[in-house]
Length: 540
Image (cartoon, rainbow, N blue to C red; front, side, top):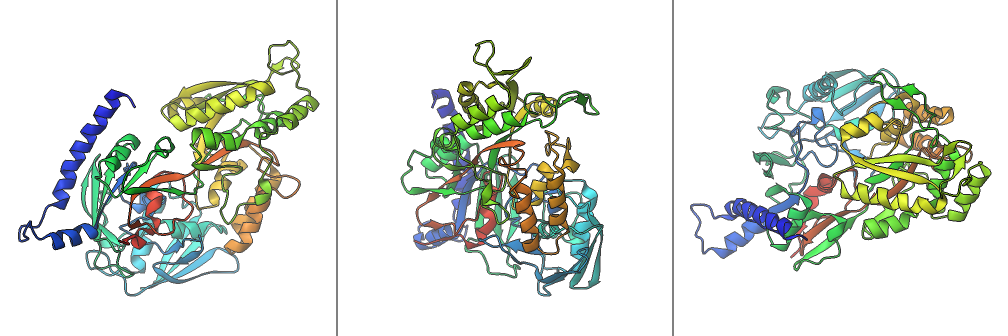
């Protein structure tokens, strides 16, 4: 670590230690020498070093809570540690035979943190507000939502969509009586915690919600500090926090009094290829397609030749797993998508059979006048994406594929992501994300199907999965979309992506702090760990 960087870290620790010292002070009517009371206070409080501060605040109608517990709000349904769907506010839900009408019955004993009861009107208001927000909460399929009585709600969809259940899982309920323009900064909800203080750019302090209908959390007060990865690690070293998120680069270093928790994820990284040939342009004039990556032999050869385990060991310090799809390990993952890694000879044979040869002896394969080279873009300020890009490019050189690397901003990537390969990351507990990434309906839409991938058989499986009336039925079609024995979206099929790694989420946790059984984390380091935060406790 450079001296300048270390100095910055010490400054950060000093600033936040001042904040923390305020949290730990005795109440005015307590004696500072009453160590037993101070000990109990410490036992009921928690300080966590997290990285990502929610830019848009704590409003579920604009996306808060979709990557971890919404903390302040409750949801109709939720997933347990095995990712099974269970009730939260709901006591029951049914879907009609057509798959278009969802009826949800909710508890009659729930209050918001301000003491007001939560009813079906609040549920209706939440979803109507979210549908008008134009945010990441996608409710385009929702035709209407109605309150049948005080504790029964019906959702009528424009067409059947099995993944609508994930909207019921991911959308926290807001109070109709207390929702306004400043709600994101002053949330009121029926969740296990309530917001006490938000110092933007620094910290959020929450306290247990006494009105919470379920089991009260062990911790009465939690402080979330928004620190960079370096500063988070330094705060752990200084003993200032009970839990700190850290990058893989620090995972080999030990911190006295803390242990490393390494959590499996679907927070993946992979290379998406332009799937079609060049010649078309977007409405904004950006080029579409690439003649090299449009050749399936190139895409399959890269998938075969890349050594995923070497990427895990070298770039992630062993803290991750090889990735083969965007949904590895989830209930809708098809394990038949696994392929043999680092099969350089197989890749060479495939390319040769497809007509790729080094005709001029420069080490780069050609097919007629076309050279086996293309540009790979990655986010310039992301060290992991940069390292993965460099490593993959090096792995492909002996194969005769030349990958030119280009680090850039998201703005630069957006202009080139339809005609050049891009290193992107995804990861969700909602199979609908797979539809977004691979469906021809989303070709060229935002960062979804950037390569303009299309397979009519895969699209048909998607339609069947979405129209299924229960998740079990839908899962079979999600699996077939990945690989049905003949075709699919995985590397065994069309290989529009070369998935590389799933990054473990790493946390330094103070000895004696039990953070429960962490389910497979989704994209984004930090908040996913709070999914089960009501179960956290001290064991010693």
